[in-house]
Amino acid sequence: MADSKPLEEQIMAQLGTVIEPELHRDLVTLDMIRDLTVEGGKAAFTIVLTTPACPLKDQIQREATEAVLRVPGIEAVDIKLDSQVTTDGRIRGRLNLDIANIVAVSSGKGGVGKSTVASNLAIALRRSGAAVGLLDADILGPNQPLLMGLNERPLFSGEKLVPLEAYDVRVMSMGFLVEPGKALIWRGPMLHGAIRQLLTDVEWGTLDYLVVDLPPGTSDAQLSLAQSVPLTGAIIVTQPQQVAADDALRGLAMFEQVNVPIIGVVENMSGEVFGTGGGQALATAAGVPFLGSVPLDPQVRIGGDAGQPIVVVAPDSEAAQALIQIAQEVAARVSVINFEQRDNVIPINTIG
Ligand SMILES: Nc1ncnc2c1ncn2[C@@H]1O[C@H](COP(=O)(O)OP(=O)(O)OP(=O)(O)O)[C@@H](O)[C@H]1O
Ligand SMILES: [Mg+2]
Picture (cartoon, rainbow, N blue to C red):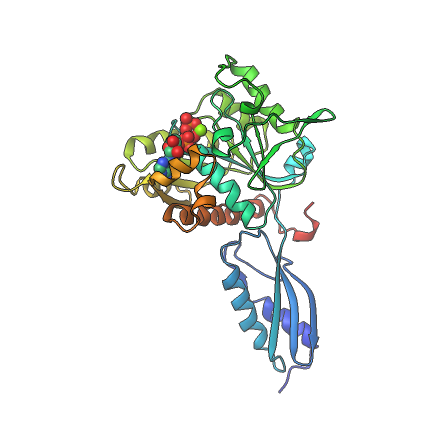
């Protein structure tokens, strides 16, 4: 016997059986279905994903199509994909900045490729369709001007500094504000103040993700940043070998101590020289997600030195593909963290 309920209702019931694989809730509960219409056996609607970088959008679209085709009388399904990045609202609430998420890129020790990962991640997120900023919080040793190929001085708009732009990512770094080669001798509270100013006194505009390249180690600067800025989460970059992973574990513990969620571990420079597997082992030991492994590849360094990140100059290389996939994992994890931060699911369209 045919179901006597209106077709729209039957379609929504079917979509209510499709589970968003990262958030583990159904598309209807997550309020991801919009603009449903039915005409002559054809259902059309929009699925609003929690990030344009959603790694599983094809799967979601396929499962939604299959579910809706189960409704008697529906012969065709036309799905549009849209996205609205989630936020826990703290950055807007506390700092009055229109930034949905702040993602810190950190490492227990220097030279592991934190800045390289940060710049490529920012560009990969941007290329997925998100609005992205990159804040170089390494006040004493800023790397982003070189990596992003920027050397102008930023201008003021009223009281605020206007970020420079490279590869469509808005970038701010202390390196834009001091003479090259002149060492800064700031310490403790001054450093902390400088990082905060680079965040709050800059005209970031509306951002889905602000990627923050942190200075290396677990010193005061990181700790105070982690405490004073509402970080959505932290990414820990490590090299594959044991000693690097031990340092990374200390970095990880620092964030957990101040209740900053760990987005996951990135292993960088894996391959013959440093080995492979340390990142995964660290993630497993710490009980946090492993986001992926970026191979050691001279092209990464050459591109970085020339202000041309690998995801731009060689997007098909293994290293770039790994970084692009890591960016998708990061975006998905940020959505999950935002949902976990809430007691109940708040419909996406009410998150401001
Ligand atoms: N996957 C990779 N393959 C080859 N070279 C890499 C890779 N990742 C980073 N590098 C190179 O390693 C060097 C250190 O990288 P990077 O500056 O990103 O590290 P960092 O952790 O930010 O360092 P610091 O602690 O000094 O800020 C750079 O020359 C960079 O180009
Ligand atoms: Mg660096």
